[in-house]
Image (cartoon, rainbow, N blue to C red; front, top):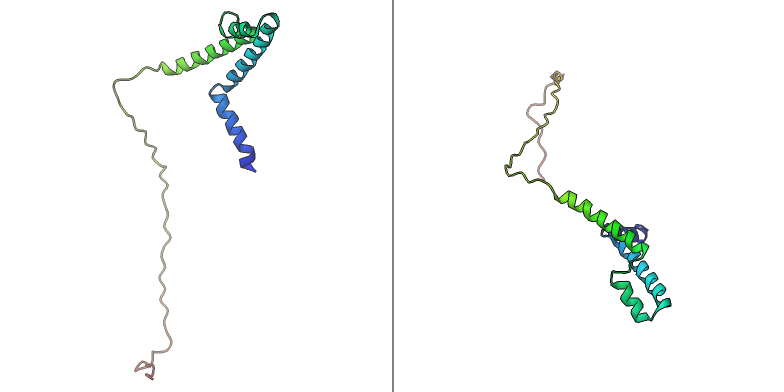
Length: 126
């Protein structure tokens, strides 16, 4: 059951993490632009106007702003100052010392009331 439900969610998460949602929206915007421009001129001219970059629609402008915002966030992460002196600090957490109280060992010996038989019994060899 997890494989049937989990795989589509994993694929969706991967697509969103690499910007697939913007690609999908851009495809929708291009299709809409081709249809709108084809109503006024030939299909060849509509395709040229769609992909020339000089006639963006409102959705294309918003997608461009979203891409720029993502690129700015990525640049901020990359601009980390490198430290040329490599010093490694080790933090050692010592466990709390708890005194142990050992139990007292009481040794009691058991005395037999009878002595063992003399000579000791032996098993008969068959």
